[in-house]
Image (cartoon, rainbow, N blue to C red; front, side, top):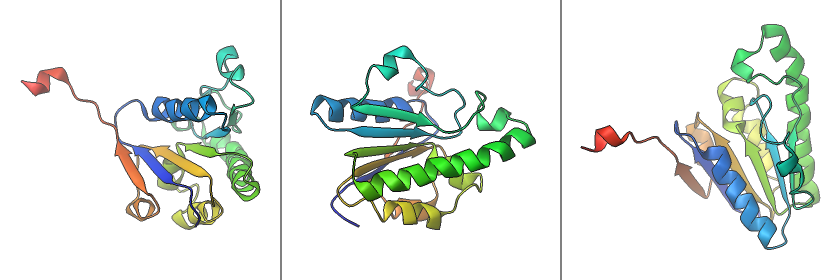
Length: 165
């Protein structure tokens, strides 16, 4: 692997996707390009006029057709979207191979592994192409093998103020 950094945003707390978007905004403010690919989320964040105005510096893609989160889809909808998910992963591989972006965010990719949609080896084969591109992986379910791929792991968790005394 090259000089690009691999970061993981994980945990049961909310904020993994917004944190990745914040990093993407930092890259864009420096004139760098980000590709943001969302998986399993349903409608996601890419379908708003505001997000579309961030292009071309930040491009957000969602390959799945359903507006429902993956867990709320019927078995048939899940099966139909598996091809779309694979297309999204192939697009990620292409982006890393061509080096056309400075940051690639694979939003909820950790949960693709958890749900058996892809393997850790599949993820490794994509990340092996990252050279000088920084990559952010997000998801709730962190696989120990994936931890070894990362330069840094950030865990987000909810802290209830009542628990603090």
